[in-house]
Amino acid sequence: MAQRKPRLDRGPVAVIGSGLAGVTAALRLADAGVPVVLFERNAALFSGASAVCEGKIHLGYTYALDPSHATTKRLLSGAASFRRILTRWIPETGLGLSEQPFLYACPRDSMISEDRIALHLGQVQEHADSWGDALMSKPDSRLRRLGDSEMDDLFDTREISAAWETNEIASHPATKRPFLIAALGAQPLVETRTEAEVTGIARDGDGFVVTWGPEHLRETFGAVVNASWEQRLRLDEGLGLKPPRRAVHRFKCGLHLQNKELADRTPNVTFVIGEYGDTVACGERVYVSWYPAGLVKSEVALAPDPRPVTLSPATARRITDDSIAALARYMPGYGAALAKHARDFQVKGGYISAWGTSGITDPESGLHSRAEIGVTSLPRYHSVNTGKYVMAPEYGEMAALRVLAELGACA
Image 1: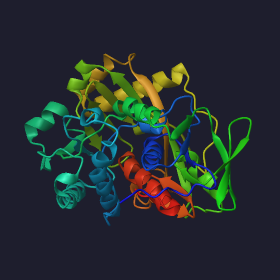
Image 2: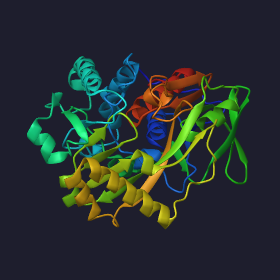
Image 3: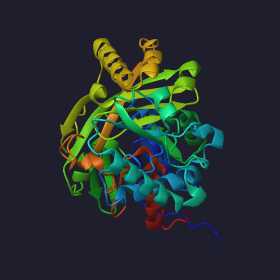
Image 4: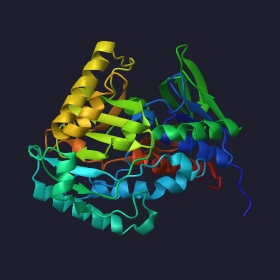
């Protein structure tokens, strides 16, 4: 079938935000013959939360306080499409997959019981099994409880009552960047603009006027994909798209280091459920986070303060030292290994935006669910709430396909 020419009488498509969802949307549209202008407020493309997060390909194991498993089902869908979508532009080797799967550890002061965690993990594994080989996961790993000797080797069992191996893996965010940047550069239908923050969107007949940059430049577009992350709801509201709930925006930092020796010693561990953290190794990359130490700010608002969050050297050192000390409590041997590199880590962070008004210690908090995510659409306007990193390619593609349908173009 011949490709239909898209109707672009009101100009190209504006894609706001060059994270994983925004880049996916921009490339998917351009590959179908649609001109795109990709706006990024930072000085470099793909440099926000998508580039500095843990990179976990969530399957739902973290969300034991969502008994409906609606979050699990959403995340499994994202995990099933992650590889299929991204390998349009990234080779398999560029996905930066972790060699070892995630362990889930239950501290003795967890918000929920060991038995309840075990039940949840088993139910998630059953849901995952229904997807067969489609998932981005460790195909040869099954849910299993660690034995006594394994527990003694890794954890202080006075602090950790049980741990389980899962089939969940991580995908290093930074390995994707050069391939995605190259794909954008090779696509003549994509114009990229950095240091170009979009400050307003207004409907203008069948199109939109986008205001951007410190000079408040105005430009007309035929359609808009809003993948701007923590400023997304503010831009939505300018078009009368009201959020269904209040949102909390947390600026969270983690420790980052490229060191093969330490990476080889780093287990992929998530502690559940409470104010804990994660350790992640992908290739030579080590990522370490501890929730109370790395939480720099939290705002319940339509959007957080737009001013950039800057960390003083003293704050970065405090985050590093407190994170390592907390992990040493639960994993003494690994904590000692981290301490040797305490001054080598870089502290980087980004916003985590989610529905809710309370913190993670509230069992009723919206932070314990990511079911209410996806693409919210008005005619020719599509707002992308990825919820978690694993969902970014699926929802970026979904927004692009909706635009293509409206423009009368073939996917």
